[in-house]
Length: 349
Image (cartoon, rainbow, N blue to C red; front, side, top):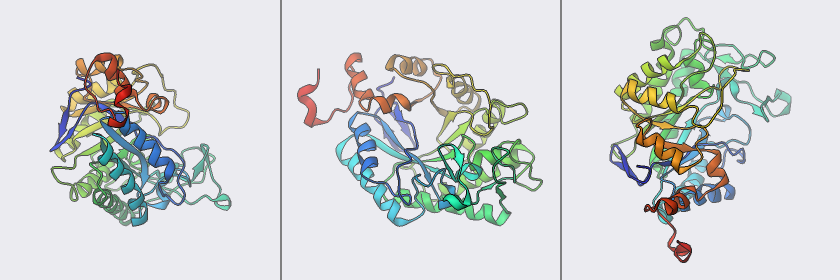
């Protein structure tokens, strides 16, 4: 199954390997550069079915760090478009972008909040609760500001589609802005954006609906969630399944299932495939396609996940940093077909 194709809307991925979105902290003014060109291009040359570009901010204030990538202007989109063009002209890979807003976890460097005097900026969130107690309180978004934020995601999605991206993913995980709204521990609002699951998920549903307005049957929509935040009375797997049912009804094509990130100091048990059971629970509970991620390091491990119907795509992070040719090298061992650059055919076993 790992080397079988799969369709989302009218878009067909050549295999089930996905380069998971990973921040590179290497942009200036949100712009992609030569490093990103080589970084993403090499994974496409390595046979990866879907390349997912890192969390890309829809507004300057939505960056995790001053070095994070952005798509809040046309210049940034054009630079990303160069990567898209290379990928499409020189591989079989499809390419996606993860649209993001860091919320209260913005304005940091090396996991510490930057002061306003040292390049930092005021952050925003669902409520004025900081990620760490010693940090500045974030500004609680007004209803009008929420509407403006939703529109920023829509505008960013349109820019991404205009430069050729195949898939849009909305980042609703890891304690960033949308996750801050989802969690009852970071969202204590009393208006229509707080309280019940329906209200806490409202901003995400509005973003999904807005982004879908600029998509068509050739451009699928993914959403990354944290299935649990490992905290008592916090966001959990049961709510993740319920949310995923709603997202399926709103024309979301896949749930990219991760975990954690919203509660400082949460204890996360980490082991190979540790998040796969969550992907399986969402897949079966919501009857929606899912992506599995979390210390998946081999084709054998990935194949087992797919064969047991625990997920539909395999998102690989650290292992694909170590080995850009993971997909094609694994295909040699398994004697399966996978894209290999024609320039390198003399080296094919």
